[in-house]
Structure formats: C-alpha cells, structure tokens
Length: 345
Ligand code: A2P
Image (cartoon, rainbow, N blue to C red; front, side):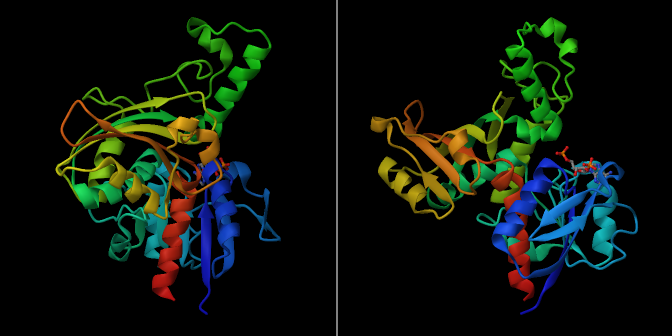
C-alpha cells in the first residue's frame, strides 16, 4: 500500500493538538510526519504514535522537503503566507483558517456534505468554520429531502474556539471568582483578559470575531456565506446571531429552518437518526437532549429538540451540538486528508 508524508502546521495549538489525537486514532497510511509551529515553540517535543518529534519553526523553506499533505491550524495570516508555498511544492494543504474559504477556486469541504468538491482542489482545500460544519452536517439530509428555503442560526459557542487565550480567559475568570474578586465589567482591565473584550466568565458575549459595516460580526457572515457555498445555494436566505458563552468546549446551536416542501415530523427524526454522522438525542419525556459535555470527545453531531415551528408553514426547530475542536476543525481536516489518501492510493 502506498504511504504518505504529512506536515502539521500549528501543531502546538488547541486544534493542532486535537489533530494529533485524531491522527493517532485513525492511524492512516502515513509513514512520515513533521510538526511545525512558530519560533516560540520551535525545539519543543511532541510524543506522537510512540515516537518523539521535535517541533520545527515554520519558514519559507519548510516545504522544500516534499510533503503529500499538510494540515494548517495556525491562523489566517500564516496560511496566506505559507499555504501557497506548500502548494507550489506539490503539497495539498487543508487549511483550518478563514484565509481561503470564500475564494471561488478553493473547495470548502465537509466530507459528509460535499466530498465531490475535494477533487477540484489546486493545492489548497479550506476547512469551514466550526459553527458552520456542525450545522451543515445536520441540515444536509433535510435539504436533500425537503429543500431549505431559509435558515435562522443562533449559536452558543465555547471558548476553545478562540484558542488557548480564550480558554485562559474563562479559566482565569473562574479562578478570580473563587478568590472572591468582583465580576465588574467596568473593571475588566484588572482581569488581564487575553482574548475577549469583557470577562467571559458569568457572561454571554454577542460578539465573535470583528464587527462589520453591516452590523453583523464576521463569524455571523462566515456562517451565512459558508453555508451557502457548501450547500451550493449562493442565494439561500440565512441570518445568524453568534454568541460566545462560558463553556469550555463544544458549540451548541439553535437552528430554525423553513423548507419548500411539507414534512412529517417523525420522518424528519427518522432521517436524522438514520444518518451515520448524526446522533439523535430527542427523548423529552426522559429529559434527554444534546449537551456540550456529551459532544466533547466525539465526531458525531448531536441533534435534539426536533419540533415543528408552528409560526410558519414547513418550519422546523432543532438543537445541534458538536465538538468544535474535533468535528468543527481537527477531525474534519483529517477526514479530508483521509479522502485524499483514498483518491491517491
Ligand atoms: P506557537 O505555539 O509556537 O505559538 P491557538 O489557536 O491554540 O492559539 O494555536 C495557534 C497555533 O498556530 C500554535 O501552534 C502556534 O504556534 C501556531 N502559530 C502561530 N503563529 C505562527 C506562525 N507565524 N508560524 C507558525 N505557526 C504559528
């Protein structure tokens, strides 16, 4: 069997570490690995598949050595600078950042939804935003059957999506609270926040990524534009409100969707339950529904609270939870690499 060579860029970050774990679990036919990060962690050690690796500093020459594939999880700036260099050297890059997602020549892929796009790559494949991935996994079987007319997203997003600094802000907030410090936004400076503009502990912040001229945040527009691109419906009516909540890991989403066609609610539940990538947890009699702590550590998208929106014709509400670091980033990227391996074997 053919064997491949893979580079992991941003190996020391939250997503990079999760990617190592997913790669270890899958044990793909990859015989050589290399781990890159910034100068800050160059020289540090990584134990991976029973071997010790030294983290290398990423630079213009990192891809002089030929890699078949690279997973980038090091932010948009790093991706813009180095992914094209890797691609020029014949490497196929799966990039987790927002750098290339909306480029019309770059596939934006969720393997359960639009795997056929993978073959259209010219060296770079974009991994969608975490909140978009879990939503489209849940929406795809419904769109195929009933044709989506409009979507309203409301998200409750974990701090791990903001990287190590986001996690630190929540953990420091909890620590300060335990030490008896007052939670006072006016005095938020004293909390030494690394990522968020206000304390995330004890707050919900309707602010993820930067604000845009249209009044939406960039995260909201990512959900809107990326959903349209992945579902291949450039004009689909979608609106979104994205909120950061004091949860360590796994994003929760309330999804309201209007279909062109009529549906039977039990048929909808059966359709969701039948999908290999979705776990339906919808037993309200026994108070069972998806929660973030259940989603963490797995790749399936959890769906529940499935019910008719009786304020409109053909309307549906459901609750959708997934591990934003695994399925929302690392696992999705590794699944794309897995497909590339299948195509190239
Ligand atoms: P480092 O640990 O050396 O800073 P997170 O999203 O959890 O903050 O992680 C970001 C990841 O991207 C880390 O692995 C970080 O490495 C890496 N990174 C950040 N900037 C660069 C850069 N200029 N070149 C390579 N890797 C980078």
